[in-house]
Length: 113
Image (cartoon, rainbow, N blue to C red; front, side, top):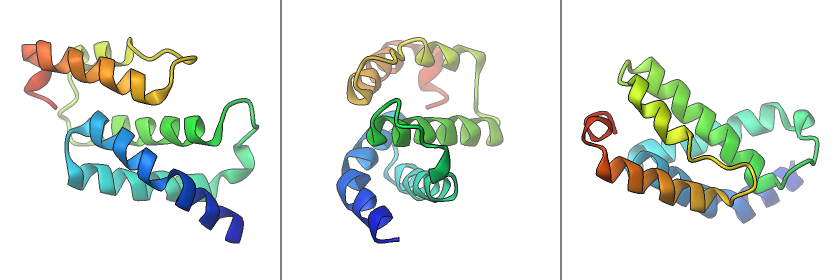
C-alpha cells in the first residue's frame, strides 16, 4: 500500500494537469484523476513495465475520459480526430497540447468539449 501512495504522490499533480488539458474542466479532471488511480490500484498487476508509470496512468485517464464522453452521449465522431494526435512515443503533455490546439480551431469539436 505504501508503494502505491508513493505513486500517487509522484504522479498525482502531473496527471491532474494532463487530465485538465484533456477535459478543460477542473471538476471533470478531479473525477477522472480519482477514477484513474482507482483503476490503477485495481489492476496494478497488469502493469508490464513496457512504458513509464506516468504513461500508463495517462492512458488509463484518457480511456476513462473517453468512456465518460460516451456515457454522457456528448461524444461526436468528429472528436475521434483528437485521438489522431496521439503518438505513443510523444510525452502525454505534448499530445494534450496538440489536442487542445485542434479543439480550439475546430468549431464542431468545441461544441462537445
